[in-house]
Amino acid sequence: MRIVFMGTPDFAVPSLKGLLEKGYEVAAVVTQPDRPKGRKRELTPPPVKAFALERGLPVLQPERMRAPEAVAAVAEYAPDLIVTAAYGQILPKAVLELPRLGCVNVHGSLLPRYRGGAPIQRSIIDGESVTGVTLMYMAEGLDTGDMIARVEVPITDADTSGTMFAKLSEAGAELLLEWLPRLADGTAPRVPQDDSLATYAPNLTRDDERLHWERSSRELFNRVRGLHPMAGAFTFLAGEVFKVWGTKAPDASDASLRAEWEAAAPGSVLETGAFGIRVRTGDGSLVLTEVQPAGKKALPAAEYARGARLAPGTVLG
Image (spheres, rainbow, N blue to C red):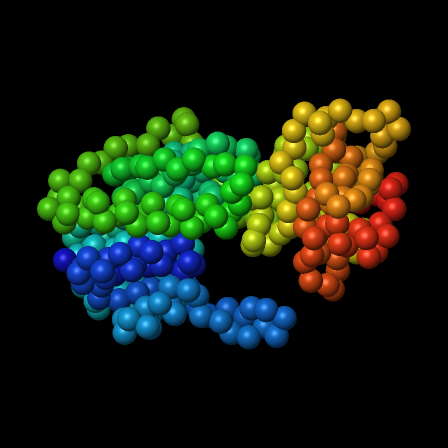
């Protein structure tokens, strides 16, 4: 069984690594083009490319998978099966029809919920307590193909997108390897998705990253976790971007405001101390534990408040 693997970020690496370690023939790897990263905007290969080159695998990096030359390049490897994991492009019908065993995708949610490009971040932002991975046949729609199998993975208050990416990438690799023998012999199930239960997880926008302090403490806490360690949540301080990388999980005490805090507008700094920075929210308060002022490195919120003398009454927005 000749496999062409398609994936781009760290999430996809365990699936590719698992295929190789189990002795499957990976004929080629398809990934996104190198992109500029960091302050110097240096071209950086995606993690899947770096791993594939270490293992001596051929790598294709088409800008558009729909381009006829990209389809032809994949066809040259005559795949029996195409496996994708967070590749980042929708495959055209011409590619979907290439392998005799079809195309399967390792998707980071419990489909039909959270179809789309940011299922892990959105599930945390939405306050879900459980997510998972779905192994599915690919179709022309957005994550609409028949399901093969699913596995659940809990989300705790200690989790961020970073920790969940790691957990789900490993769970996805295990699920893929468990079902590959049945994919190879054509006995894998096909369970249609119930479209009436579908929800969507579009890629995050700049507004998704902004903290709106009139929201509840729990909503803000979840948003910060869901954006860590990728883009990061942000607010404004004195007209400049002020990133928030960590907060304390809100509890009952955060809803019990002192009398002098009741009239404070959402976004107001209520107090600072060794615990961090306490900010007024729509239903109480939230303690910031790690922040990053404009042009500076991230640091503990208590250290920033002490050094910058962030006064109670300062309004973040």
